[in-house]
Image 1 (cartoon, one colour):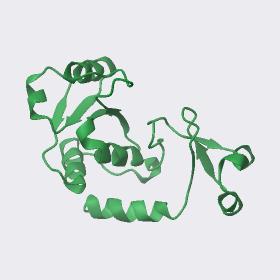
Image 2 (cartoon, rainbow, N blue to C red; image 1 turned 180 degrees about the vertical axis):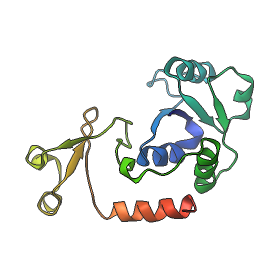
Image 3 (cartoon, one colour; image 1 turned 135 degrees about the vertical axis):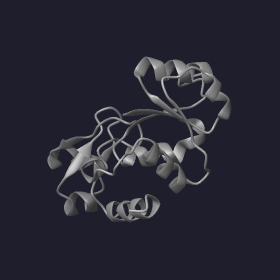
Image 4 (cartoon, helix red, strand yellow; image 1 turned 90 degrees about the vertical axis):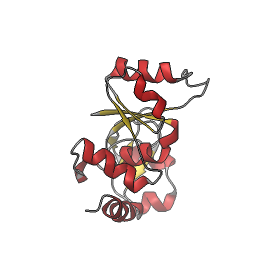
Length: 157
C-alpha cells in the first residue's frame, strides 16, 4: 500500500513512515516539481498511490483513490487510515523507512559509519541502518520505546 500525503498532513506522513508505510509527501513547492492539485492527482495515478488529504475540493477530481482525512488530530487521523484500510501495526516494519525521504533502510556494518555518528552512539550501539538515498544513519535509541508507547496510545492498542 502506497500513500501520497498532501502538505496539510505532514505529521501523519511522518508517523506512517515511522510505521513502515510507503508515503510520499506532496508539497506545493516549486523546487519539488509539484505545482498544484493536478500534479497531486497525476502523481497518484502514475505511481498507484492513495491520496490522503484534508482538501475537500479534491473529492471531485479523478484519482486512483482519495481519502479525505476528517480530523486535525494525529491520533484520529491514524485511526481513520487504519480503519479504512483495515491496517495492523507490524512491529517488524517500524523504523524500516527513512523518515526524511521515504527510502527503505539498509542494515550497515558498524565500522562503515564510525565518522557519521557521535562517538557515544558509536560506543554504545551495535546495530545501525543507513538510508542509501540521503545517507542518514539510524540506530535504536531511547526514541524506540517512546515511539512504541506513543503508537499504542494513538492507535488504541
